[in-house]
Length: 518
Image (cartoon, rainbow, N blue to C red; front, side):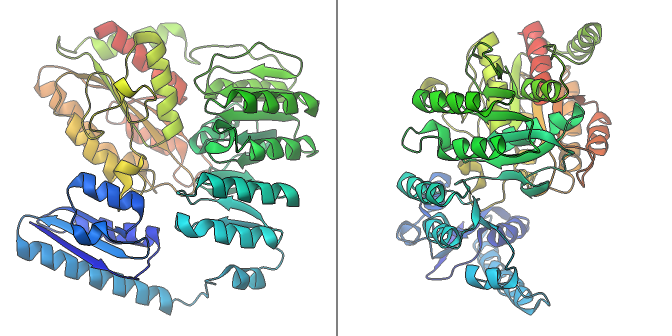
């Protein structure tokens, strides 16, 4: 039984609605629920879920949608009523809080007149207006919002370039500026390595690996995913970031991370790096590394990008390696993990919260064993027909829009992944489950602990079928993060999960196991 309520001109913050949605989904008898604004993306995703009617179809981004599917009509009605009560209650509590929170940029600048950077997180159709205001006040911008048009991005970056300001984004979720982590970022040692990245979890993985290798970060600048991919954007923020690091006396080594860039943009970026006169490291995810040239070295994976950068910062030579664990120990792990598997078990299931980490794993497996199904695939033949249903060897980015309508990103709320773990457990052909656990500001307070029971149940289910499930994970984080890297690692290991030092090493170990049983 479905019940849908659309309230016109009732705007609420998306994060606020996600918290309400989580509570409504937990009501007894509720099968599914969405509490969200009527953005184009949300409307399309609701349509795909089957929670849809003519009111939703005609809704606008300013309209509130509460859609519930329940076992009985009275349960659905009660859930809608409860959602409204929760919205009113939380709104009232926010208004009664002691701390004054400015609701406009002008008021915020009045309160903090020395600020020179603003983080913008508003619905995409309002984002350009707010960013333009900030740039015209000579403020650097980190634009967290997505659903910003290409034309708006180009206009905003042109304005920022004219004013000599950074406009990181849109859809920029990670930065470390003057040692301060912004949005989804980690507590990293201060150092002399500067990073410019067109990838949030890519920046997190590289910066955390730098910390593990004994190095530190001077700056971590995000650009937004389209900055290098689109020739019209032209890598404007990447190039401004490189220029900023060139002129920064605290930065001795520059590291650039991006998904495959447009060819003309890549040429400009490489030319800019050559002109810096500083040692530079490039990792274009998924592309064959170029040849070392002058002050530029190329890395084959995210961890290697960190390793090369740290070596350069210390005046040392980096020695490439697949594993930091001795090879004989790796072979023992492969033998240990495969000996109790049954003949049906042969497939990988990668359940990721970080999109770039999912891409890195997918690329590794594709090069070595062929077809990998995913919602992140660029090959249309390998895009999952239904991203909620795995087949063959599958790697899923659970942070994709299709999984986050009306609910928080899985790095914030692990229940999305927990549900998928339970679902995958029913497949007797699954041999390896591959996971990332991302720590830091913005992430869940205990991401490993939140999925521990479902992982233990998955292992138990495999044993009951006469097999064995290998669970391989990596933890992106540091012991400076409030969740604690070592504490998270111990929790995973307590139920028989193998935790590797990086996503690359976790993927390579999973690959060895799949090769053994396939």
